[in-house]
Length: 59
Image 1 (cartoon, rainbow, N blue to C red):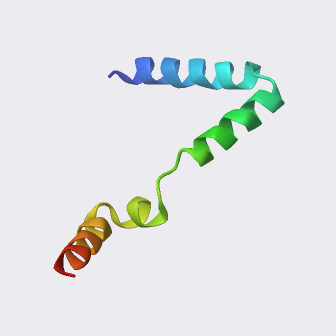
Image 2 (image 1 turned 135 degrees about the horizontal axis):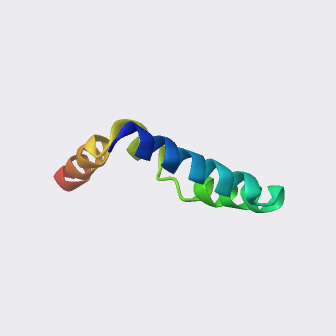
Image 3 (image 1 turned 90 degrees about the horizontal axis):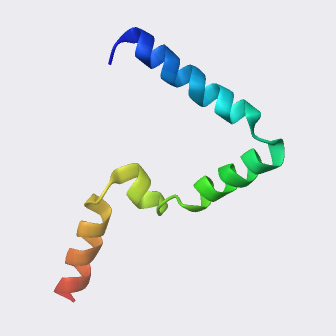
């Protein structure tokens, strides 16, 4: 992507964001926060799940 294309893309997104009402922006932010995965998965990836699966499997 060329620099001019990137600046154009970022400007369009910024203008689109600023044109939205404040309440709608807050709603979208809450939706994004609600869609996050569990803490272990976000911070450490799939490794904690593999470890928990192996320990449960051995029992």
